[in-house]
Length: 237
Image (tube, rainbow, N blue to C red; front, side, top):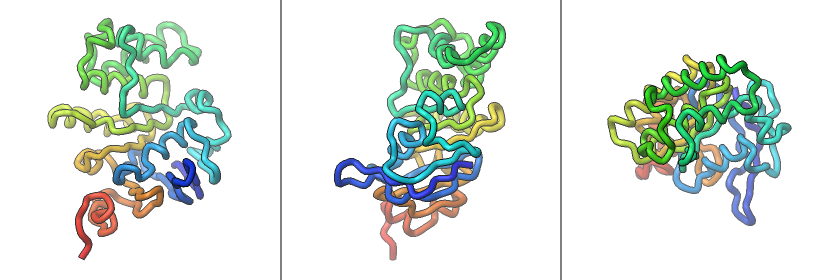
């Protein structure tokens, strides 16, 4: 569980997060909202890219704000990005293996973990391909492999479904829903694809102008009139 209490994050006169309080209490939790709602800001606060002006965050009993970003990574926090971070001149294998550089593992255990992560995302056989040779979908999968290697506890995913075909989105859904089962990690997922959120997230939080307007079972949240007005663009009668 992630316990978020009274988080405040501002940029000049703009309040990106305003007294945000919520318990993210399921294995896969969605975060949705219109552009500028504060979704990516929340992930940046969780992984330490941004320091909030007020509030607290506890994840599985750990005070996250007390940890520097690299300590959060060592603790088990992982992140995928809107613009994936695959290194073009490194092989797929090395792109994944680099995530274990700070983890003390015997060579065999290290190799086993890297191979398992690559297999998990369906890229077995591509280990020696350079990052630049991977297509957009393969790069997305490579980034997820980087996130699941090395015993993650919490994986933050920022719009992994952007630009994917329906077939690719189907594969992505299967991968995301398998993460808690295969790796024991919690997933916090941001995406504009409501179908992806509905298919993968047991619960969903909705932000609007940095404020929480709904949280609960995803099917209930998506029917909420406030959510339809703020996010789905439907007029409330």
